[in-house]
Image (cartoon, rainbow over all chains, first blue to last red; front, side):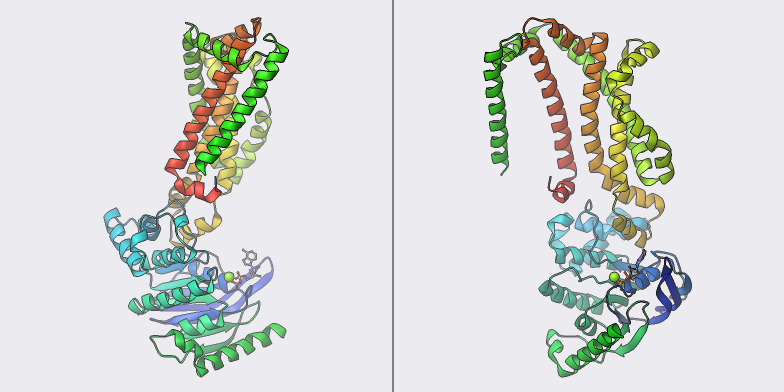
Length: 251
Length: 251
Ligand SMILES: Nc1ncnc2c1ncn2[C@@H]1O[C@H](COP(=O)(O)OP(=O)(O)O)[C@@H](O)[C@H]1O
Ligand SMILES: [Mg+2]
């Protein structure tokens, strides 16, 4: 049974506390959004879970295994700027994780093609990243994370650098892909609408040092549709979260 | 776009040649031979028995020293860029040696190793290696930490990060270092040969004694052509083999 337990994480940078005693859980097949003002410590928390940053204290347990301070094993990461390797074609970028694992070339090409297809980029397999638009680059970034079939997907403001139209399209794509291959997702964002549209559950964080102001279970059915963003219930929740964050910033 | 920049280049060359012609006609052949006189002299030089062996002996000795400089300089530069310890040990020496021109060390090297192949290749090596080292050091320090983090997130080992991120990121810079090194190697080789009056440098010495400056200009033009075509070939190889790099720098 897939499960993520993060317990009592604390982290300071040069005496500046960013996270104090933070805990969270993600259940099998659950999409959790981490929402909070920029600079509050969301990325730091995600990178601690990912193993890229070491925590001062606390534990990260994935599927029963203590993975505190270690990278790899079961986690896939989508980065904000997509951060593709410019010297690798789209296909080779998607296959990167498998190459690290030592999967044979034929096998990793086959699997990478599958995920490129899933993000709608069949035709772009041999293109260099610089030949792709920002939206296409991020699709490759998503395919790269899915390709290692992680049990937990970590996404740090993956659509933050995209224009609004492209972002809306990619949100829908992500929901579609995720519904086909449901895994645990931790999705960092500072967009309230984005969090409501994508997540099953939202953890609303305070300003730094980040702590959870409120945990919201998103009541909307899946599959989600664009027009949902105009429903009164959606707007109501959106306003509530917005007030919560504004109040915290002023406090 | 490309044809246009070629046309502009050609125009620039024509203007310089015209100015040179005017200057030559005013100052006389003993001071400044005209391009027409230089061209006539160039044809005569190319027909002379002494020219081709001199050119050949210069080129192969230079290539040995140059190849040695690349072989030592590239790994050393990468090591300096990636390890603060190596940087701290080597950098002071590199900064010291790089300011010493080939001409300054020639007398010492003649005393140490005579006037043979060892002398010429050593001069070339010493005059070239530090430019290669410092170019590669800067390049290696500039390897994107974000991309290294991506590799780490996919659980790439230290060696895998070196092979799959650092080396490909540095590949275009190897060709740039080769280009910079080549210019210095050629220059050092000619300097060395002029001191011992051998090979191409010897021809330059002899031409300097001539009443007309035309043969001297002919040899200098020849040297420029060699340098320009060799660096051009290296640049072409770079653009062909790393198309993603050119797009990044807009070069
Ligand atoms: N490597 C670091 N060194 C020093 N300070 C850092 C480092 N990483 C993050 N911080 C600081 O920690 C705080 C939280 O950063 P971050 O987790 O990136 O916030 P968020 O992702 O929520 O915008 C910020 O004030 C940032 O300046
Ligand atoms: Mg962030």
